[in-house]
Image (tube, rainbow, N blue to C red):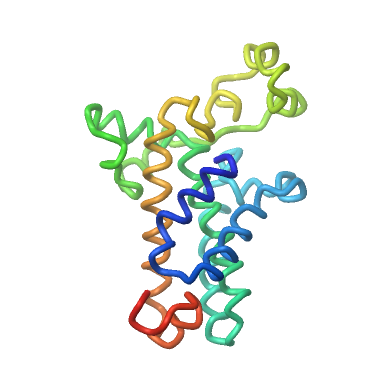
Length: 209
């Protein structure tokens, strides 16, 4: 997803649960995953190049590190770990064909009805993610070159598969799934925390998260 949509999805999913300061720390870490250094040799951050197993493992690692940091009283570090996790789960839906597989089963469903964790889609052998075909793929990120480069790239390239902005097919479905998944990840992490730990992590008084 492009930056404004990562921000909007994270705010919608987590805004009610985190203080403004905590939420900004989460968002900063989320957006940091798209820094130039994190675009190279970090496919698992974005579920590119079919990096499913390493991507799932990365999410588990971020969740574990966030819990450990909260318990050590390191709230800012915990938020950074969780913020990075949110970026990865959001990119899963914009960089894979999950939405297409789900819509095959629910052709008339609205975007807000999408199930972000439908097992039959997650285990479908056709599930795949966008591949980055360098160096042409780099040129595709430059708008004037896109019309020239796109016909040269395969159907499974990032250029043809991504749902990073509203101009792309299934963008609304990807956003809805990513927002719901972000909320699910918060609830999953929260299950491992005491009320006092949640208060530290969220920056909200106990009982308000």
